Length: 135
Ligand SMILES: [Zn+2]
Image (cartoon, rainbow, N blue to C red):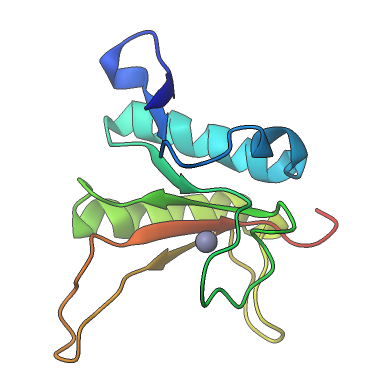
């Protein structure tokens, strides 16, 4: 895995299949959010694994990734409380540069989880970070 680290607790990791050069093409403010997410993970000693940058994905409707305004991070290793607290704190701090469908309050981070027919989580879920057009 590609990582920037000077000790285990300061690690930001990227899934190996990601094109790290995307970071240079992404909008500056989404990169700010990534750095702030990394700081948050370091402070709380939580995993910081980036799972998606600008690449297209099957079934993806939103254009935020391909336009360099989004990234995803895994919530593996995070508890439900840690996820909930993070979403609240991070959106309070950054909602002004976040985005949303028309008529919905803007958000800088959304938690996504895949559930089966019984409503049980079938993955640890992931954070989708996004900034609005022109941010
Ligand atoms: Zn996403």
